Image 1 (cartoon, helix red, strand yellow):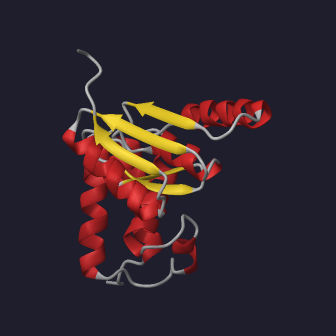
Image 2 (cartoon, rainbow, N blue to C red):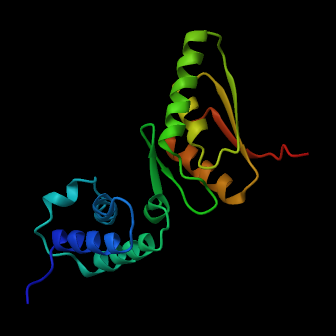
Image 3 (cartoon, helix red, strand yellow):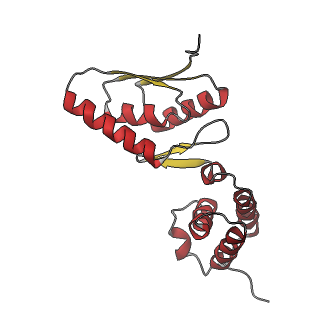
Length: 178
């Protein structure tokens, strides 16, 4: 009996995800494999003929099983790309969507054409900090305050701001419901 390769595991995962009616099963299997191998989405193909190390195989299959339960891919992977950043996400934090990127791009365009600086930006309900980080990156002279009431969101946003190396973002708990 031959040893299963990385490519074999991706094909099997694709079949399992498809059987569980997970949308885009091939892409999901590839993203999960790339994350387990700590590479890019297509890097796994370079290694597709290699045997799959047992510890990585267990991690991979655990993630595939979680995705079969319809846990969002961002939560399974633990991160989500957003406007050139890789942001940590998890339960208690919404996963940034492409529509949010479009909204941020529209706001950035309007603010850049306005020309009034310095800016003070308030991101209410920051979650992962995606919007605050994108705004702070685009306007390094701006003062950005990212607020949330959720403990998980605040921890995640602080981690993402720190990882992005931004000094012009303050993350704090603020409840505007009063």
